[in-house]
Amino acid sequence: MTTEVTVADNPTVQVTGKQATGKHVTHGSTPSNGPRILALLNQKGGVGKTTTTVNLGAALVRRGKRVLLIDLDPQAHLTLHVGVDPDSVEHTVYDLLTRPELGAGEVVQTISEQMSLLPAEVNLAGVETELATLAAVGKAQRILADKVGLMLAGQADGGAVSSAAPDAQSLAPHSYDFVLIDCPPSLGLLTINALALANEVLVPMQAHFLALQGLSKLLETVSLVKRSVNPRLLVTGIIPCMFEGQTVLAGEVMADLKTFFDAARSMDVPWRNAVVLEPAVRRNIKLAECPSFGKTIFDYAPDSNGAKDYLALAEALLGMEEGKATSEGPALTTATIA
Ligand SMILES: Nc1ncnc2c1ncn2[C@@H]1O[C@H](COP(=O)(O)OP(=O)(O)OP(=O)(O)O)[C@@H](O)[C@H]1O
Ligand SMILES: [Mg+2]
Picture (cartoon, protein in one colour):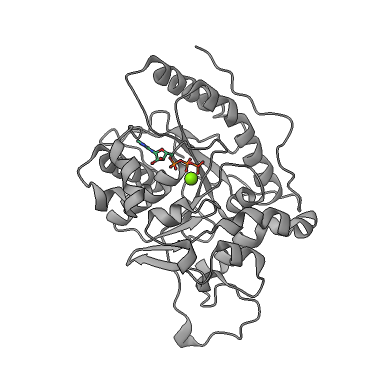
């Protein structure tokens, strides 16, 4: 099977703002040596974005990393998955995006010693309409990036515009090694906010024929945001989820993806270094069960294939951070990590 993946001419979102002229950076590097900020993005629903955000985050914690999870989906599945009731928290990402005086540090919830969360709520669904005026002048696309950026820079108030300068005592930097952003299944303003903040894009995907069709729109959106809002943005790779390796279709889709990315190596596109991360995350019932217990796979079923696969994925990402994709353990099939 040969599936042509092309980038559509017609953007699905309008991105306004100053033309950016950033240069390429390698996977994992950020201009300020801050955390790696990864947006988990696929406009197709139910492909494994939230499952991957939670369990990849938890796997990174098990490897000693400090992780901030951001729930940008009005369904608040990520928030629920880590055991937080969206109705019980004082502030959510909705407040962060709609109340100029509120800083990210006032919204962040502690999940464990090494994991924090910016929670979502159902009201987030209305945010695109509420910010329509700002969107017209190009400001609404960067609200999250500006506020979380301030928090990550260690400002105690996390970007509250009305606060007095914090004293030395209150300067408790929110320092993280990884920020993982769970995007909604759309390419609207919430997703643009995620892409404005992120350095990298990970695309959880099921190995279906139709999954490839959506990739062109997704990549076009990433290109637009890179050109207009965030020159650092790069596509790190595809994460095959709910993988059933024994099927012919899965093998063919993976081969097509690798061919597509290999063809982009010499092109000036944000996915020029993208890889298909391996091993894929296998279909595993334990991964589907753990959200209803408000637990990660490592707390719910630490010996399951799901736990093993997400640990392997974390190792793969960490290997890319160090600029090496070794043949031991998790491999990166088409990796050309600069
Ligand atoms: N590897 C897996 N094995 C079995 N079930 C899985 C696996 N990954 C995810 N699931 C289940 O598939 C469903 C969809 O996954 P998930 O919620 O992570 O997708 P999503 O892309 O975040 O969806 P949405 O677009 O609605 O936000 C969930 O019920 C989840 O528990
Ligand atoms: Mg989800």
